[in-house]
Image (cartoon, rainbow, N blue to C red):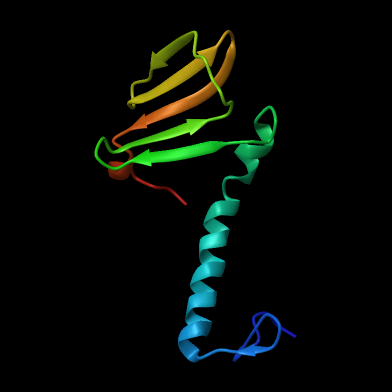
Length: 103
């Protein structure tokens, strides 16, 4: 039986066609999050913290908290790579919303 069943949402609760559409959108959104899994598996402890500053249009990605960067470098594509010793502990991605997203 395919999931979600038409008209039924977990626990047998009946939902409208709009509810089915919302469930489909949620499933698609989950697929977007699952795209992070390979990088998450590469992180030291399997943890990643992300935050977005809309005013600065900057995405912050941290692999360690608390983190104390001892060095950083700005790449040609406006990404700041933060290091603690030799270990990459995070990225600061400038102009985040203007980037071309590749699938």
